[in-house]
Image 1 (spheres, rainbow, N blue to C red):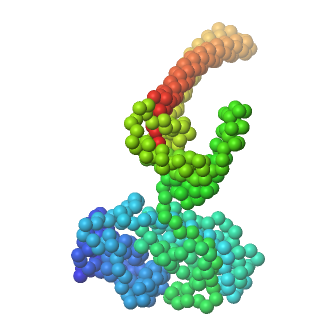
Image 2 (tube, rainbow, N blue to C red):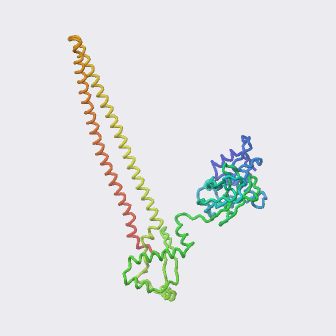
Image 3 (cartoon, rainbow, N blue to C red):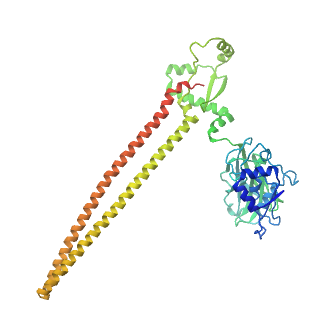
Length: 485
């Protein structure tokens, strides 16, 4: 057996997680707290359970969340203190990454939904209470405080009721390593009770869950009433197929309703009368075709006469040669639009268009930034030139006044000062008008350039849209008749 301090074990788990799991298949590992935990605190044991460590030592004198998880973990299997590791952590031909985000071979991921409805006799005090729901397991499965209900109204702790949306754990990769925790607290955060249940042991339906204290001892009265749904995880791509298989009657009724609505729009009066005289449906069949990654569902109807002669026609078809080929209806455009290939092409085109728009915005922003810099530079140059002219005029006026003082009387100086001021004002006005003309000319040029840039971007987007439409429509028209069910 090898003993690792928690820091060293965490380093192995971070740098080489797969190798650490392989090591624990052949060697016993003991993880103990680091020496700096002078307050007898505990680390989270779930991290090392995920890596297959056999012994995880904790400070038993501290009943924190880590110790509560440890007590729950070894409550099962008759409290014998032993739990069998999952099979993929024991078999030498299996390799497991604790940080994986994909499903493990041979393990069916679960979808778990929990709705907290009410509580019973949570505390004798007249305070508001709330409930928290958490999930522990692999890093991708762990969700701390995933659901926190509102505080009960009117300080009702005897039978509080919460009318809130359920919390859905969409994808629990490893239910054997995951655990669900439901805890109740008072309004100020005081702990009332909790219950930790393995995700693999959760059963669907309406359930009363009795709470326990921090030492995992059962409380007499406190309980939480919940509604739980447990399902196998289904990717969003196959959600429609699974819904049709789980409730075929509803799906067939929906298709019949759609066919009637289409018939009302497409059939003529004579055809509508003929359709009303058809004998009632005696059987419904589903044909699933997975070809070229297309998941198509077809629904057909047999009348009673056709059902009677079905076996005879089957034998005739086997013996008769194919003269004119099979007269099988082609896939409709609606069916093709529901296929994976079409949806993947739509996502690709949307991504291309989004990238093109992003480049256009970037180019426009750079153009506007360049224009602003040029505008500011031109404005500064005009201001600097104006200051130079004013300083030169001031110097000339000062020399003029000096000559006047030397040649004339003092009383005549005011007239020449006024003349100098008028000269400065006229020269400054000319500088302002010249500056405005240059800035206005610069604005006009910028508007023309911006208009040309906008037109170029508009035509490029239109061209890309036309190419996308051709890419989608052309295969549908050429290869569509070749896709049969």
